Length: 331
Image (cartoon, rainbow, N blue to C red; front, side, top):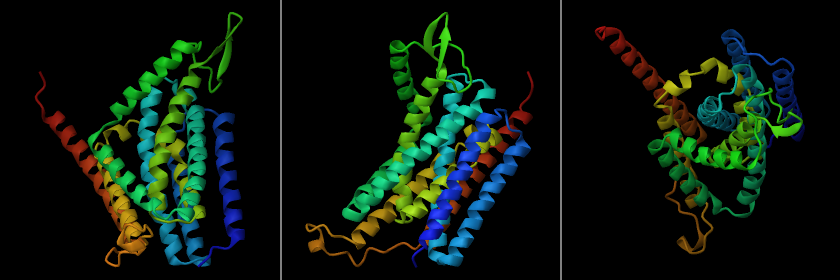
């Protein structure tokens, strides 16, 4: 069932307005959000996403609502992983905590811009080249393996080389001045460290967009649902950053849950490509009847189960380690 155009336009306008208000508040009233404030904002955004899904169900059908929820949960999972790298960047460049809200908001806007561009490109590729699903599927399986066997320290090292190269070529001060990019020192115009942080956040956003867009196209090929899921996933990411803080670093099994999700969607995409096959050198350009189309409800179940098990296993590990430390004899 086709979603009415007026709903798509109205929803996108409202979502972008909400995001614009969030950006305005971050720069208008820079502060460190309290745990209660962050939790309330996140609860409001999650409730808004569920209401959006209910409205989709009412004006569309259950399949579209399910695709949105599955896509939103997938993008939210990848956004939490993105958040982990944001924490590394903020720590690496010693960004004062009172400025982190403004700088983080810029990173979130950059993430939305990159994902918006990739959604448009991805939608065109899918429309004109159905075989692109083969590439998307293989790419996601490869990404899942990389996610499981490598750590964020590898990203940190490659990022460090880029930053060292930049510092040798542009004049950068040692002091932050909020989110300002340039300042004047002894009459000389110089860049603040915020520029380096924005570049690091931007390159991180670009890498995560490369992963997240093929992943959600494995759930739904509707560009509106893809974009809406990404906006809802990024909403509240700033507050989640302050709510979780160092807890994200202790969710050690989270990357395995995300790897399972990516691998599952990669396999789903590859099976879809086989089912709809148009490559002349495969089965004479006909689809493979044995290749199943995995229902949205199954995708939703796998995503929820994988992420829930990863979080629960991480929490259990934290409690076991804490118990061991408390039981250890004091020297």
